[in-house]
Length: 275
Image 1: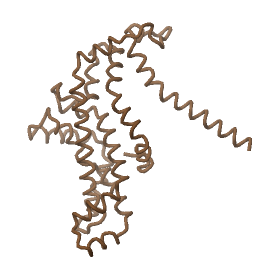
Image 2 (image 1 turned 90 degrees about the vertical axis):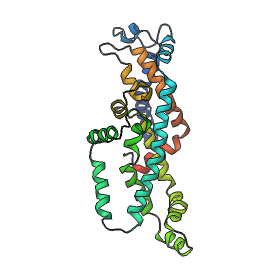
Image 3 (image 1 turned 45 degrees about the vertical axis):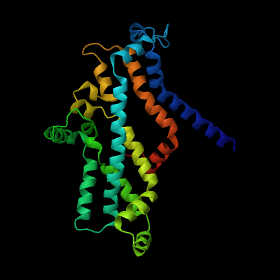
Image 4 (image 1 turned 120 degrees about the vertical axis):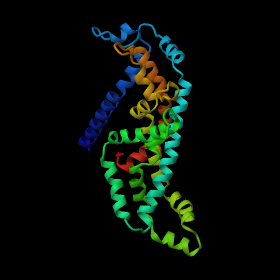
């Protein structure tokens, strides 16, 4: 009994240590956002706490960057990607799991192949498509790569395959068509999978830096993640201001996580932490 308690205490100590290590970058970011440039770059000795809390770093970043527009672009991109990705992935997943048609397995194997290819490979053809339809510097350009998700199709297909066939058969006997079966019966039953997909879509849309940086050159169409990369100077970096901008950028996702942390953890458990 004593050995078991000692083992449990050891596990807790290790978990607390790991949690502290993971929190150090966020604490350092927050403290650095209130330092002067000299304090932020001091190495011997390292300055942990600012001597005077410099709020000017925040006022400078807010006055020199249109954060209202950055928040709008970021959340517009996240919301549209969530809606389209969940809806289209669910429709594709339902077709691949419950509807018999010629070439279904071959088409689904193509979806699986897409999951194995790095997303960077698709950047050039996606850029050419957006440029060809003259949609650069637009919200649609930000949303385009996330309209449908191969992983979401795979994830929701597994949910639909686990549902009993008798549900559809009963609905057909009652006179329901395929649209009614999909929207009224299947989608509500796959709600946990759709919530997990929505959370991960929001997370990856928020931290997507490369695509917004490439497709939108207009500062008014930038997102929070892409604007942070432009705050850095070509030769020097003002770390306190950069950390202040990072704090301003990250707080919406912190609030979202606090509100939806139970669904977020369930989503990781559902998907095995893979995307």
